[in-house]
Image (cartoon, rainbow, N blue to C red; front, side, top):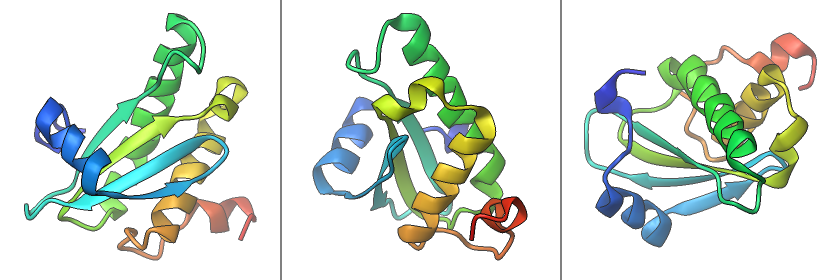
Length: 123
C-alpha cells in the first residue's frame, strides 16, 4: 500500500478506537470510522497477548498483506484498524485474507463484487 493509505498517527488511531464501530472474527477485529478524506487508510496492531515479537510481527505482516490485496475494493473515506486475535497465530495468508474480506463485507465497506470468499467456495 502506498504511504498515504497507512494509518500511522497516534491521534488518528485513538479516534478510530474511540469513535469507530467494530466487527469481530476469530482471527482479527476490524474497527472502522469515517475520515472525511478521498481515500481509506489502514492500520494494523497486535498486542503482547498474541505472543512474542516474532508472532506479533508475523500477524501484522499477514494483516497488512491482506489489506494490500483487498485495498482496491475498499470503499473510500474510512480509517480502518485491524487488531490481531489469538486465532491468527497458526493462520496462513489466504485464510487471513478471507477473514478480512468477511469483516469488510459485514461492515459494508467492500465496493466491488469480486470476492475471495466466492472463489474459495466459502460463500
